[in-house]
Image (tube, rainbow, N blue to C red; front, side, top):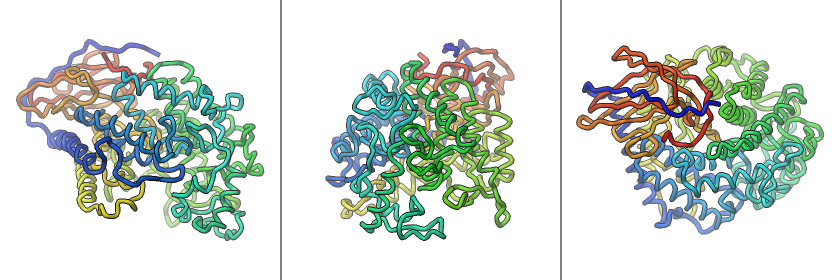
Length: 606
């Protein structure tokens, strides 16, 4: 891959024009979120940053929720939030790590053992910190140490089997692969899991004629039977969910450029491709310790931990294969690494049925075959096409979602921990949803208001009974919709994806990432070989300079840039554009780029 970093092109706007409404609102929200971060931390944490909560927390669950409560802080900083937000982000990561080490979930600064649904949620924080300051020695050291736990280089965490190219258990972490799950491990989740269908259809007392039948996990006798079967069938061995670990290893590569990390990602994803081919094109959801499909499941390719049946079904398979494929594409520039994800999405589409005039695909597989038919999820298709810009992926999307009006209407599109779903953004950059900028700004204001109201109405007398998700639902720092606007991205896939972006910004005066103060940005359109970008200086008195990088990790290269107002096109070659914005000036750029032709890195342009 090309190592070219800079371009000599300097683009300059001088004419004063009133800033557009979207730019003023975007800057207002960035700045107010910075204020809200200070207030949120002051209300809910002690002077050392630990959460004012209970003295003990049992089980293997919880630290991911602690990290998720503050994961938006480094994201806001990457967008252009104040330096104090960066300082708070690091303080809170360290405080959560210490507190949950005391509780017992964290050991050696990483989850002692859990699954990659939850590892992925917490590790996103680490990836954002890498983007925030790749020169931070402690962060870099941690990143490499965490990668060693999964590359077979840490004897205390032998998660990786290099012979069979598998992660040895669905439950893994800094204490290594777990061969047995205990009742204590699940203590905090038993009431929650009682609301899900039961993992197996041959548990005594299960209603075999109802694929959605549930059993009461809070009943000790029932729970003991379920746990015995889970230990016999689900652990040890590998599951597709573990593909989310490829982000942790890619994170180490982005710090170092070390080829062994790249090789690991490709080897592991390749192993799951081979297993899928061996299983007739269906990705098995369980592989035993010797690499055999269904080895501990009496030969069944379905029924594994976070697999085709339990607890969530197909979207976990789709999401994990998509995350891994994105990482492999980033590292190689080869979009065929997304074929595994495509094949599983195509498989489900081939099984579609028309029910009440609605096209639905199966989300689960059990003893009676495919079941739980629902409409397919647009976000996977949006992420796929965003990454590849492949006409065949566009055809997949338009065939499966011919009427996308429902993407753009309805209630605000934010989810867990302030995560904004990408469908509305995607429609905008594809030219279908012109109302997106105003809508996402309003949604962000709504989300902030709701969370601030919850803070104001919190019952502190009940603090001991707060659950571990309490702060996620109150954190008023919700920049993800603004990140979609400014950086031209669907945002990171929630359970451990990296932040793949069309462009990224740096402040050359303060030598930091993010939009300089007073500057707002909007990616208006994406094409197979470029984008349209508007930059605005909302300050009426002072000029601002911003560096625009091609891709979140400098993986793309600019080729041309056209100043729409001046009508001039420049031939350029490099990862970075310099743009100088005079007071109250703005610039609309039509940018061409070669995608995935440069070596990805966390390194700053300078």
